[in-house]
Image (cartoon, rainbow, N blue to C red; front, side, top):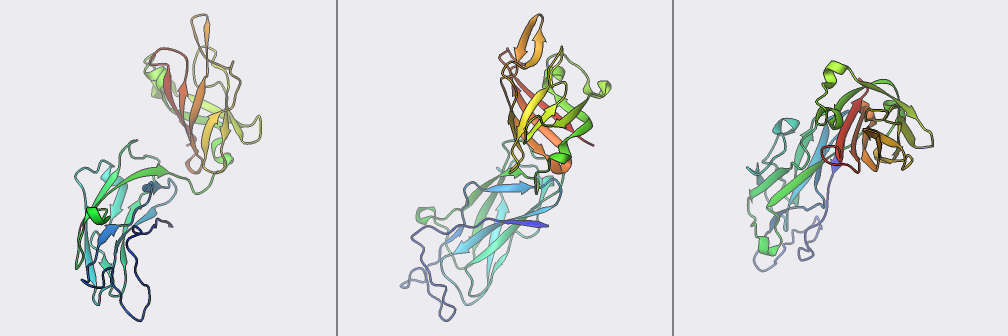
Amino acid sequence: MKKYIVFTFLSAALFFSCDDEEFETFDVDSDFSLATFQDAAPAQLVYNPAADTDNIYTVSVSNRANSDRTVNVSVAATSTIDPTSYEILNLNPVIPAGQFSADIVVTTFASDVFPETGTSLVLTLDGVQGAEIDAALGSIASYSIGFTVECPSVDIAGIVGDGATVLENELLTDGFGADLSAGGLTRTVLAGPGDGQITIVGGVGFNSSEDLILNLDPADGSLSYGGSPDAIFFFNGPDPINYTTATGRALTCIGLIELQIAAPFAAPFDQNTFRIQFQ
């Protein structure tokens, strides 16, 4: 299980000593302790389609204590991400005596079904024993966490071959009402023509749609249009409609290609989602 650990520091005002011999406080005159989520920008849950993933978020305090302190965290009602896509085993971790922080571990599950775009997990810091939460002094008590999907590596071999099943094609389903499941539509994907490129044979449109050439970023699997500006997306009667932009990602660890394809045409053909997967 791969762990992604996100750390940053408290605001510049919170200076403290890490000397193990003596506990020093944020304010030597009052023993005041400030609690906060340690911020990360941007904060994101990582969904790895191939393996469960531990995402670690930290609650910290500005001074150490002589005894353990319990942290109280809850999932806010404003959280919109699918709760079945993750698990939090402990919302009440303990800051051990002599330490400054405790971790909240959010485990995301391996799957090829991901949360809806734009959703987020919102955590609320409800309290920490012996510490205060004060936004005016820099406390972060509400922590909104988006998400990203990442394969552990990008391997072009996972997205080339014959018989990739068309899972979604808005051009057909929204534009012409075609039933993809009834049609059993598939595509062949080739490596090339250039280094770091793939070709979807027959393109993603209809009516003499031409091959779609895409650039594959080996670092993160992102896709961009790599073909000719004259390549034909589809014909509108006698008039060819060209590809203008194609962006997306390849999750090579599960053989999935997801694209957003733009065309200089009226809705619903101006923006089209296209997804294929090798089963």
